[in-house]
Amino acid sequence: MRTTMIGDVKVLLPDLEPDDLDTTTNLGGGLTEALVEGSAWRGSHLEDVSIRSSMITGVDLSESTWEAGSLYGCEITRTDVSGATLTGMTIERCAITGSRFTGARLTDVRLKDVLFDGCRFDYATLQRVAAAGSVAFSECTLTNGAWSSCRLPRIALRSCDLAGLELDSCQLDGTDLRGNRLHGLKTPLDNLRGVTVDEDQLPDLTQLTVAALDLTVRNE
Image (cartoon, rainbow, N blue to C red; front, side, top):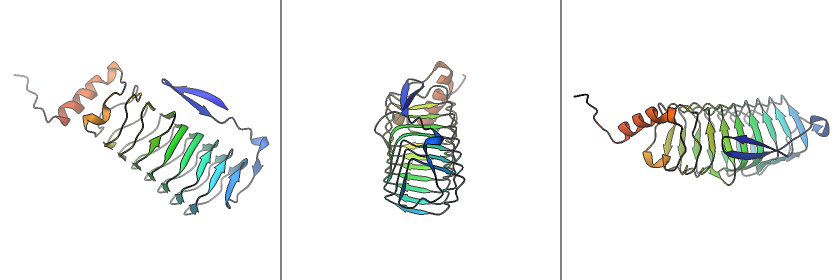
């Protein structure tokens, strides 16, 4: 295992060696210590499938459905999960890099020690997603997404694009929002209670406040 720091959040991640893994293209009933490259699993229906200690690169999981099951100790790179539906899953100790979740729907997903780095979550829907440990989004595109009833305290969102992201009844207390452009974020102010921002974000935060309170600003 290795650790990485994103802002003030320390994430515990896997440290896998491809030579130690078995190459496969068959998902079957799950994977352990597997190396998967370029497989086409588009539209798959997975139920209670677990993948452990595996490297997944360039795989097509778009429009798939994944119910229950888990990802544990995995490195996932340049994988397409766009339009997929993930329900009741646990994702733990995973590094997910350069992957696409455009239009994906994540419901009742539990995250612990997960890093999303350079991923796209535009138009994605997150409902009742919960962080049970360290979680970080770094340099991700979160535009025009909708997050509702998510419990994501003390996570890190750093250098992400949040334009058009809608937050509804989300708990983000202690979350590190530094380095993001908040312009265009759509949220009641209560969702931002207890977050950490930097001085450069104050103008955007002011605009959010003006919009949320329906203030009239006059120069005279």
